[in-house]
Every structure is written in C-alpha cells, then in structure tokens.
Image (cartoon, rainbow, N blue to C red; front, top):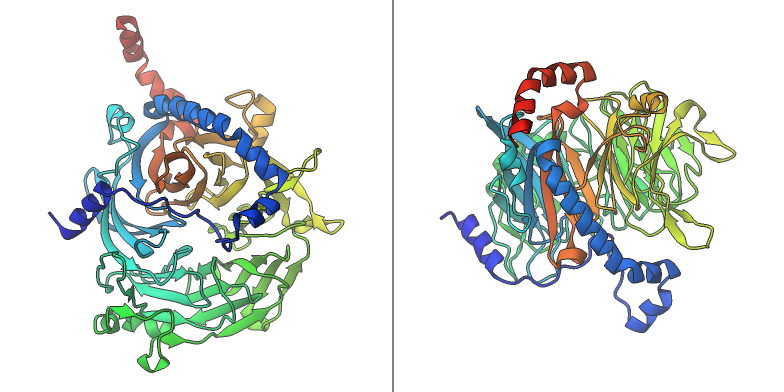
Length: 534
C-alpha cells in the first residue's frame, strides 16, 4: 500500500480533535467577555439550532432521493479537517470514460498536526457514463474513491486562499496569516507527512511588500505571470514573477525541505519585491482581481465599502473609485472571464456584510449579493440575495442601485462565481447549505411564463442541496464544463471537518427545451412500459 494511503487510513482510524471554526480567526477572549459581546441575533440563532438541524436533515434526505434524476455524476468526499479553499488544477490525462485532474485543497487544523496544502488527483467521470444506481449510492461518511491524495505540503500557517497560475500548471500561490504571499511549484515540492513538530515546507518564492498581514485578497493574472494581493495595510500590491517561473522547477529540487517560517533570505534568490504598491483604500483590502484581457488593469474591494478600479499604466492611484458601493464591507471580487468588464465578489467572513459584484457578459451589468442588514426588530438578519447593477448607472444617491435582485437563499450568501462556459450563468453558495445556479437570460422567461416552477425565484434553474452545512467555497471546472467542486464546513453538524463534493447536473436541465423534449420522446414507450410493469 502506498505511504500516502497508509497515512490516510491511520488518520481515519484515529479520533480527531474538534477542528477550530473556519473563517477569519477571532482573538481568544475570556468566557465572560465573549458572553458580554454576544449579540441578540447570536442568542436567537443558538435557540433555533435544534430546529435548524432537523430542517437540514429533512432537506438533505429529500435531495438524496432525487440524486439519480438531477445529476449526471456526483462524488461525495468526507474531509478530516475543514477546508477554506478548493480549486481545480490542470487536467492530467484523458481516458475513455473518465479524465484525471489535479485538485487543490487546504486543511485548517486545530494545531495537533500542521496546516497543509493538499494536492489531490481526481477522477472526473465523463458525461453520461455513470449509471443512475451508481450516482445514487454513495456513503456520506466515507472518502470518495474518485479523490486520491497525491501530495501534502506543510504550510507555514493556515491556507486561507489558493490561486493557480494560468501560464504554468505547476505553480500555485497561497495566502496565510502573515504579510507575505507564498509561491509553490507543487510538482517539485517534496511530499511531506503532516505530523506534530514537522518543519514547514519551504516556498519556492516569497513575495514581500505588505506592511501588515495579507490573508485573503489574492489573484493571478490570466495573461502574464503577475500576482496581485491586498491586505490590512490598506494597499494593493503587484508583483511580476516572470524571471522566476522558468527556474522554479530546477531550483526547488536543490532547496532544503524545511523552513523556519515565512522569511527566506534574499541571498537565496527566493524573495521578490513588488512592482507597485497602490494606495486608495481606507481600510483592509479584502479581495483583488485582474481584468481577464489586460495585465495592467485590476480591481479591489475592501472594508471601506469601496470598489476601486486600477490601471498600472497610468500610475499608482485609482482610475475609478466607487464610494459606498454598499453601505458596509465588501469582501470578494472576481472578473467575468467572458468580458473585460465583468466583476464578481462573494466571500464574507465577518458578521456585517457580504457583497457580490459582477458584470454580465454584455458589458453592462454588475451582480451584487448583500448579506446583512437590520430588520424591523432591530436584529441583524441576512438579506439572502444576489443583486445586479448596471455599471453605466451604478450609483444613485451615493449607494449602489441594483436593477435586479436574485432571491433564492434562506441564509447569508458566501460566494458567487460566473460559469467559465456560459456567459449568463453563475453560481452562489450560502450558509443555508445550498449552491444555487442562476441564468440571467431566464429572468424574463420566468416572469413571462411563470418558469418551470411557479414559485421559483427568477433566474434560478438548479439548486444543489448536497451539503448539510454552509457552503464556504466552490469552483467551476474550466476543463469539464458544468462540473463543480464545492466544500462545506460541517464542524457544527458532524463534529468533524468538512464535506467535499464534485458534481455535474444532468444536461437535460440546461439544454434547450426543444432538444430535451425530442430526446425524451425517443424513450416515451420504454418509460410507459416500465411504469405499467411497476
């Protein structure tokens, strides 16, 4: 048996301590002080917890009974530790019935073992290959045979965000709880055993320039080997790793396996300073993103409620600054790959607000998901919606003016991301354990004809309900359209780590209606025959 599989089995056999809560860590405080700080909304949530658990279980069992009908393929993988980030890597091999592809995960431990960056191999079953019985029969308490751990990197600090470099399939960047950004050649890095006391793996490159911690705002340029970051120092920092990418593989093999922390001496030629430091935010920069068609244009959002557009060609100051993009913190931003104006945000880890901004493929709209506002009782409550803005008329009376609100979640929205394949399709995940798939082009159709379901929210055409707790991250698979990896934080409901699911909805759901009807007509007699026998 390979050493990695032995390690996994041993870990599975040993009871694991309760993992720490996912999200931006809060300083440990005395119990009395925590109780004084507890809000009425938090007390209300505690009282409702038993009912919430039963509702989640009920919803999950209903969903599981429909899996063979709704999904072309689904793999459920139980995690030992919570994961803050899940990302698809390069496709490694194409087979007759399935393809092999890299998958990147983080492991956020409680300190009994080190935090790790996990590189896994995933067998992605091709469309219309898996039998319905196979799709339905999975054990939610076990690890999936489709996901195999390939390599473990012992990360200096928890892995808050993972981003892959489009120009080099082996290079990824990670953010942690320190000012530096780490660059890793995952193929050249040695495989490590995550045991207590093990030395940290040594990054192939360390990017310096932040004056305070930079934990979440991280992006890789799609056209050039550039890295973008934001942090608590209110700055956006840009690096170029052009001179280092070609030497990472050869240099990494000769470097020591261990490192004393996040600082690597510049004499080792493994530290690089910034190309530019951009100032314009008045609070922590929470997320950054490159324009898909320009290496010199990027945007950022922060706790100052601002959305800022930058252009490195014209200097270090903002080119466009949207004050009060919303009247609260903005936490995530992503740029639609179909158009140079599409921006997507969606990662709220503080109990104030979550904002999702994106512009549709026709270069006119933004989508914005607002998490929290004050309800009529004065308590904090989730807005539970995704909102769309017209960029040409983004602001009205100093605040964002949405032209449409997508309502389908029953708790705070955590992440929104556009499909890499369909320009009008995007997904949103939330604390209600749901991952909704929307199509803006179906909004008018829903209003005019009532949609496929009379009471379904406008634009919503699929709802993934396979997670029992909040879905903290998901990623569309660019190499296999309509295949999604999603991860949930199941610590509260299971006492364990998290749940990773890889799934693809049935193509009968998103294909044109006339095609679906024509295909089903071919099997009409067979269905009638089976029904009569039953």
